Image 1 (tube, rainbow, N blue to C red):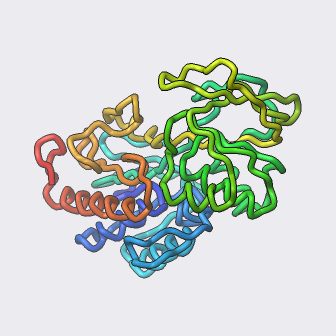
Image 2: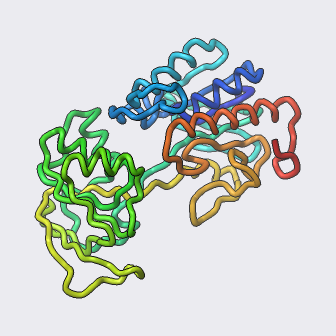
Length: 333
């Protein structure tokens, strides 16, 4: 038989923690925060570089330091129960959740649900890079976890596809760890990352940024050996005679994030297929009354400070919903 909880939040990263704290502050006294990892903090745990918290805390923090401040606040809130290593496998439109935790399968009937499930990285296959499938091709976030959490280097010489912020930060990180970064390849005319990251992570370390270029093929048998690069015009067509090769044993793919909204889709909510985000009349809402979304599950953010800010709104919305049971389609806060 399903147990009953007032508010269940799925995801214990910066979005989920901010939503939990805001809901608690707004009067919700029974909050369950489910996190599939063994620690709270989400992606921030592997972001050991500084630059977080400038807006939120008026201080320059590393990712773990930023997460640590929220973890402490959650720990100091007795009405927020945290369940780690808890993987949600099902969510219905009636707000019935099923999840696995060590040694048990649980079902919960929630008064309201907030999904703070984050985002996943786009892969090589999603941008159609031809070539063989050797070892040495990684999403940038996975390489970041390998270095910062596991203590492993992904290779010796790297080329990065895409100039998203994770890719730029990893270019600097790999140089600091002794790797050689041959180039960052970006198909657009401008970088996808923040201007400060282009300066601090590439220009300061002498790493070339090839704008209006793309990788046309990855070569290698057991391991990546080289990549072919070519310049493209404004319509992304290859310019004849501009191709060249870069020898490398590692390729990092940093071409954006996709919101993780499979649970929302299971519940029957409307999803924008182009962006994988909820279709709703306002940020943090979904098409199902009483189910909310926040953080990168709602839209992709550049700064965690804004994730915390908007996720607090989701927590307040959930608290208001629990008080009044307003309809998502007719009443917007």
